[in-house]
Amino acid sequence: MAKCFLALSGLFGFFSVALGAFGAHALKEKLDAYQMGVFKTGVEYQFFHALAIALVGVLLLRGESTLLKSSGYAFIFGVLVFSGSLYLLVFTGQRWWGAITPIGGMSFLIAWALFALGCYRMS
Image 1 (tube, rainbow, N blue to C red):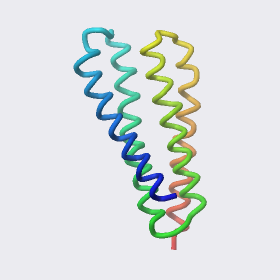
Image 2: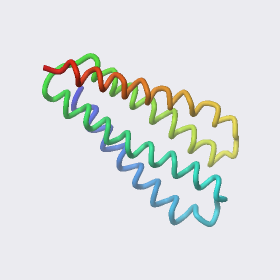
Image 3: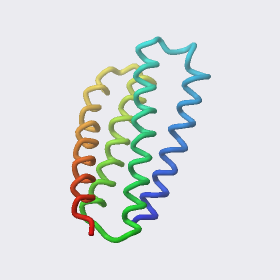
Image 4: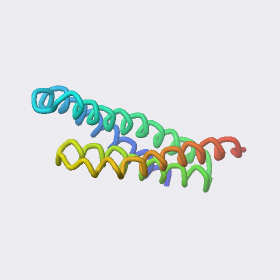
């Protein structure tokens, strides 16, 4: 499972850099300031949580931990829902996607709590 988290972290990191560059160059003339801010928030949260997923993967190389695995899954879900809903909000113009974003945010909070507990219980 550690390898899966590490590989997915790499993919999320790759796409956050690619999307960030795309936003900075291709979208800056097409989006208003609000949309650019929303897009940038999605990219930033995706990038930071890609690093968190990598850290979970590295820690799982030391040994199995249900709490850390659950944390990794929650981070992944959070990236998909939080950042994904922000990207969809920007690209579709449908503001109702913003109503889904807090579900991803809650997933991040749960992930960080599980991460903290998992690290505390590590031997």
